[in-house]
Every structure is written in structure tokens, then in C-alpha cells.
Length: 410
Image 1 (cartoon, rainbow, N blue to C red):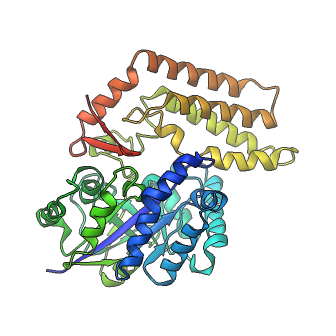
Image 2: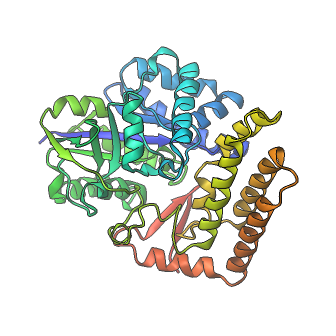
Image 3: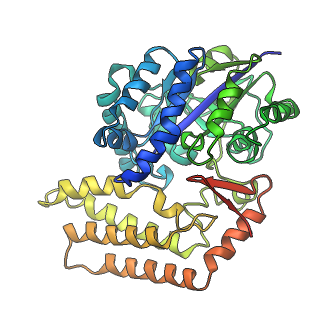
């Protein structure tokens, strides 16, 4: 039986990221993925390229990657989608900041990819969704967006990809990814056993004759070395027809109403029941997160009221970049933790505030609290205990990969 498979990939690097890491990811992930597309013209994917990454590819001499993506899009193999330029958690930002991030992403990507960049679909960074942000994307003309399947009912196994879902309020098409099959490729499947994937497809009753996977593009080759070769074997299987999301939408004309729940692609059912939809970036029990958001909100307000300040233009650009989600992710300890990044990002917020209000001390006070709390967590190994509990409590994902390293509970 022929199966329709829609592959969605998101590729991103934080603003002003390490050139060494950019080079490594290009070599291990981006270039191999694009080479697979050139070798197999029948393979179609949907791709979100954060404009933060696009800027850095161009700046560091990797315009050939941009050209390869553009060429694949012109061939119809790649569907490009919209997003927010510096990968913020959009539900946590004021609407004016959300609109600015999305519009800047479109402007920058169109400048590099040209007229082929006409996105119909939208990717919420980390799939962090709420109804307000969906309304904003609808106002900007996006026709569909992709979410994790847990957003449908707050549980897994509630989707049917043979049907198209229509948002009850915005009228947009909502695409739900299959969480288990996506995570199985990213974290679980033995790299030398492609048939194990098809066993999972056959045993996952709710996939029907079509399924949708979505993951970070860096998973292939960079986070999980060898996964890029496995993926090529999977998508070239004779039982598979690969399609873009928009192509899948055309094949599924019957629409069902849906009202997605606030969630992310990392959400677990128990977190949604506790009304913690973005726990890796906004954990009510994580004092570092709460201090980071308080500092962020105050700096946003400062920049908004400083439009006539001589340093406003510089501050405005830095604010866009500093809203990137990574600082909260590395402070989650679920399982991600980096005291170095927590400290450096807190310091950046202070430097930004000092551009506009150098005599005020509130930003430094917030930063001191953040830095001190991170030091305590580090010294007392609290971050490790949180990480172990989080990994051990996972119903299906006991292993994570980042930069080729395996992260497991002890």
C-alpha cells in the first residue's frame, strides 16, 4: 500500500552564533540534506529557514546553500514557509513584537531567496502556539500553520492526517505532525534498521494512508550523525510518495473544525493539564525563567518608549535578537542547561538597557538575581536533579541528541 509522507524541517541558528558551529552544521546537515534532494528529484519537503540563519549563511560565505535551497524551491521540491526572524516564543511577546519578528523574517528571506519566497504556511518557533498569535498570522495572509498533534486535544493519537483541519476562529488550515514518528526518527530508531520505522508506521493505527513528520533539520547528521543517511533510505522507499504540506492539503479536501490548545512541540499531556504549555521556556516553578521574562518585558517597554533616543535604532535591532528563545531553553534544566549562556544573556540585557537608561539600576538587579540563582543551581547540582526527573518521567523519549552527543537520564 502506497503511503503519503509530508516531511517538515525547521533549520535555525541563534543570532551571532559561533562560526565554528555554523560550519559544522552546514557540513553535517544542510549540505547533505540538499544533496539528497538533488540526487532524488521526486522527493518533496517543506522547509522553514529562519532568517536569522539566512543572514548568517550569507555573512559567513555560504551563499551556495541559499542558492541550492532556492533552486530546489524553483523545482518544486521545497516549499518554503514563514516564521519569526530570531526564533522567539511568540505567545510570550506583545503583539507588536510578534508582527515585527514575522515581517522582518519575510523581508530578509525574500531579499535572499527572491520571488520564490512566497510562503503560504507558517511555523511558530518551537511550535509554541496560542490563539492570539494565530490571529496575527491570519492577518498577515498565512493560509496554514503546523502544530504538534498534542495541540488537538491535549493528548496523543487524536489526529487523522487523511482529513484537513480548519481553525474554528481564523479559518486557516491546521496541520498536525505525528509526534511519535517524528521523535522516533530523531531519537529512537536504530540507524542501521530502516524497516523498524515502517514497523512503527504500520503499528501506529491513527496514521491511515498518510502521515506528517516535523523536526529540526539539524537532527539529520548534526545532532544525530548517520540519521541523514537513514532518512534518505526511508524517503526513497518504493512504498512512499513524499509531498509538501501544501500538496498534502490539496489531496485532503475534507475539512474538520479544530480549536488547538496552547502548546509546543515539546509539550506533554500532564503539562497541558497543569496549564504549562511552554514549560521548557516558561516554567512557573523555574525562578530563573520568571526573572528572565520579567527582565525581557521591562526592556521591551523601555525600547518602546525610547523612539527618540539617539541609540534607539541600535537598541531596537538588539532587542529583536535578544528575544531569541535559546536563553530560556538553556535555563530549563529539562534537560538543557548552560550556566555560561544564562550569564551571558543576562549581561546582554543589561547592556541593552544601559544604551537607553544608563543611570537606572533595575536591569542590573534582575541580572544579578538571575546569575546568582544559576550559580546556586550549578553548585548544588539542582539542574542535574531536574534533568534526571524530566528524562525519567518521559513516556516515550528517554534519549536526546544535541551536536552529536547523547543526553540520557543517569
